[in-house]
Length: 568
Image (cartoon, rainbow, N blue to C red):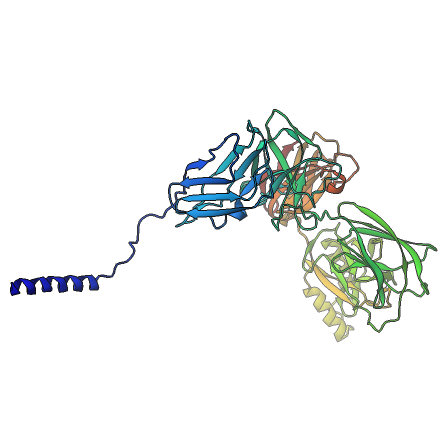
């Protein structure tokens, strides 16, 4: 008996020792879970009629997570009824605080709001529709969104259907039905009640279902959709990213030594008209939202002035104000002058050059440019086609200069000052030697000093930049043979998203002097035949004029001549 007792004790101690040595861990390895949860049952079931309960119950085939349900669940038609969610292992309960509207079809689109608890795989295409009445609304629309200018697909665009009215304002009214576009740009809204609707798509950055015209890209249809017994598909919504807010005047008052007129958004054009035709030097400053008027001796007291401002959507507003300057210790802004193109750019003989000033300026001398070879020698090239812009902040011109002409001018100088002349002094010999060694493939363009004066009496300093003579063999030609169905249009050659050159209403469109690279062709339709392309205006319910983007990429190499054929 005693031996049996000790044997039993030994067995127990051995068992405890073995268990204490064990270190249980979670098994590892195996394939990653990529299978999303599957809906097994729901109350109500999809397409149910006469549903009157305040809660919706759903059960899946695995444990689920619904932490992001409220950010993803879309209920249409839109409702302000609040709800709470309760998750228990494989099931979720959505409990509403108020009953649904009678005789209405509701659609719940869960998007990525319900996932499994391990790999966060979202339930795919989970949509639940039910009616509180005797039938399910079966109308639907399908379509896609894309960027108007590039064809690129924007992400997470809200597409809404609105009940039309004389006071419809997308900024303050939420859509009755709405959805979010997929990563491929497609969208669908189903179970719509037969009614007329307005359609709009917008970015909805702040997720409040209200369009912010100042910061969100958008698209809209000007015509009302009359949904009756048909399903609309292939709707194309071209998105634009233009500040569509109303142009408003914020203030018009002295600011330091200046008088500044501020608007709520950038302006593209403006004009000033005074009661006695007094000239007021002015320019746009800051983020292009402010017109600055500079002090002038001709304005001793307040001067009645009418300002007309136009924004990027061609919205225009006129305001009458009184310009008055006050004493100020504020120093005048530094005078800045810039020249384009940028230094080391390859230029052709038809190149236009632009001198830009940060203040309205005047030309003091017609001989404002030079082609310097040395500190004491300039070649004689005169500017042609000199033109100031409307407020005298930009001056453009061209030069009749070619590589051959430039070399001839240098050779002419050398022939008149031969290097081997015994009478030549050392300075002249040094200059001739420099000209002989000078690169004939580039030149320096200088803006001569004190040739411009600003409205605040600043005078310009020397500004020099070097340019290369473009060699035709380093560039290429793209010919676009166009079969057009519109009488007025623009054919653009673009590099990525930037227009390189544009030709109007051509059938054989020849783009010359094109640097090597990848290019695409884009057509801007001038549908109203007014000579320019219009971005439309949502405030006047005017859609943008059409843009056709050909997705075929063309690679151009040096000295190539490529021919393309397109039709629209």
